[in-house]
Length: 136
Picture 1 (cartoon, one colour):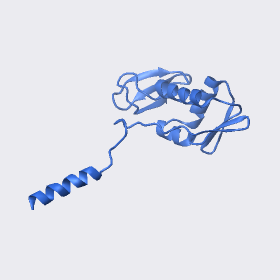
Picture 2 (cartoon, helix red, strand yellow):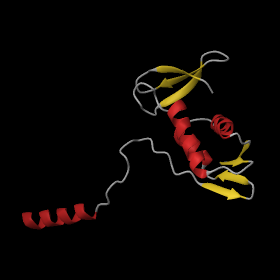
Picture 3 (cartoon, rainbow, N blue to C red):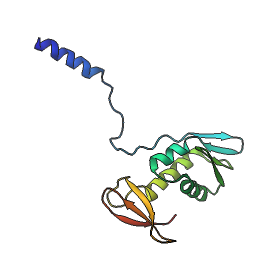
Picture 4 (cartoon, rainbow, N blue to C red):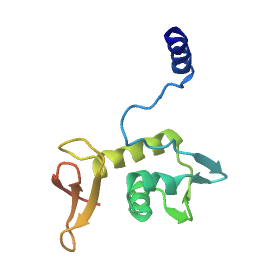
């Protein structure tokens, strides 16, 4: 009876799929970039902003400035009025995460941006309580 149980248990463990994540809770989904004529679309822009916990207008403004291409938000999509290289776009999104999402002290992604006064914004970590000024 014990041997049957052990063999069944081993067989069950072999059939369980291995988790392929990095172990980090914060995982940015793959950026879905489409080119339509002279425009570049980010199809899952709303999902990216939801994962980062940032307003789409803030992320759009940062990307538009960094890429020097005007952009507009259409529902859950971001539309650039020009051609943008997808690798460069992914790189700029990762730059945004590093500057405005990741805590500078504990390297966690549990942060939010708060306004101290009219011109000053602060990145506040919910994990360690660190505060760092940010310039949006």
